[in-house]
Length: 556
Ligand code: NA7
Image (tube, rainbow, N blue to C red; front, top):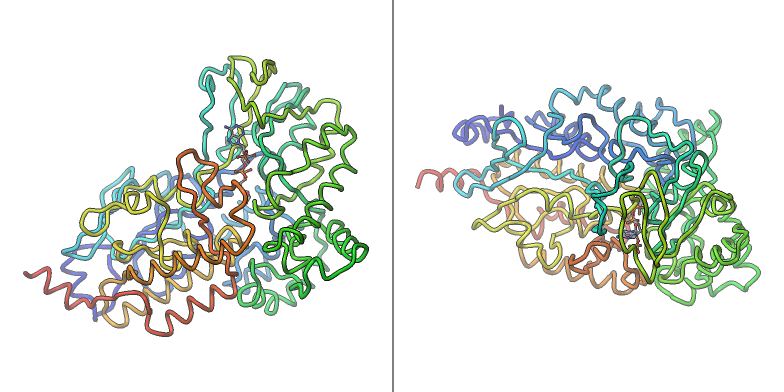
């Protein structure tokens, strides 16, 4: 099976029919990884637990699900033909269209033949004698591979909340991150939504249109900016396409978050009240995530941040008719942007509908789910259907579900018990040839994921190609380099307001999870440069061993 060339052919022959790489997950990361490795002539097996491609877009089928990055930018750039030919219908494509795009990519690049669907990877064990990984899928034979690449996604491990009585509820129960494939009809039903993160903020206005009564249970109010979603005209698409070279270059090399937008050169306090307000108002009208790019100090200066937060709170008060509901919807627990800002289509206005009620559970929590109701604050809210918009065990949750055993029999879960430790978010010391795409310690969820995915996939593919060309058996992060990187990630985060929020960036939404700021906040462009410098210096901070050494070990 190995397609490694003659420099390494003998070692691979000795190792039997090892794959060059096993990739875990067939979302946007896994699909592009397969494409790149195949382009190098390598043998690859992809395992995907869903029965189709698309990753997060395969699972998150809840009403109103859309990407929060504009689709002309939330799309692959590796194939110019693809980006020139694919027509996005709206500024923010709805989930079915993004899934259609994923399927189109799988067909166009003939990816399916190397993907085994409906299969989870349960275990991966590194063998120090052969320097190969032994991978146990949930169905089919154990396989061996030179490299294992985790393309498991940052937001793919939907989290069921631990609420008393939940399993005894007699009505329909849905999790936004694990939505059924069949159409769900809420017409005439009394529906509860628990949670007010991005998934709830997108689904509440849509559910409200058909439910007879919708009750939203809010623990923490979130900041949301209007998406201003609209159909894209062919002129708009063409204008974007003609500028793609510059747009993509900027997003990769200069931006902080992988999105083409103006880079602010002023702080919020450099402008007077009227000018500042006019700028916020203009971004509010334009809509979208770039609201936080009005000024360059919103993420680091609390006084500056307050000006943006106050503006949004004021907007909420202007939209929501009932002052008590408006007050509850105004976030007051964290600086704006320190939890991923949401973008919505008429979320706040949905609370003006007579069939929608907001229930504050900040101090009480939910006492219990009864067979026909949600009980909180000594009141029962009778419902027919329950929607859990309670989020994910983010960034590490899907990795932790795999029993990964590295050197000396040590597991990755043991190593990461106090929080994830990686070098560059790409590898973890003690786990040779195991890569993570958009892992903790990389910009990942703080960025346009596709830009970060492409950067990691290209870096990993180049690295694997480098190893092949030089007859190298292993690459492994050095502990010292890893320690320094972890310290750097923490240092950069601590210079910002982000750690002030109880966010899933911090692991704060999972009881017992260590509170570590997981993504790298230094910026997409700066991070790419660091990765490029590392590889240009012969993979500085990584240790590589030649195949010859491996063969000696195997012989002894
Ligand atoms: P999020 O952003 O993690 O939101 C989950 C929401 O569910 C949030 O409001 C939580 O409140 C709430 N929650 C979680 N557990 C409970 C319990 N037990 N009781 C009440 N409320 C609860 O997940 P999303 O799916 O909305 O979005 C994830 C990302 O996907 C998003 O950032 C985008 O990048 C796309 P809390 O804030 O913890 O008080």
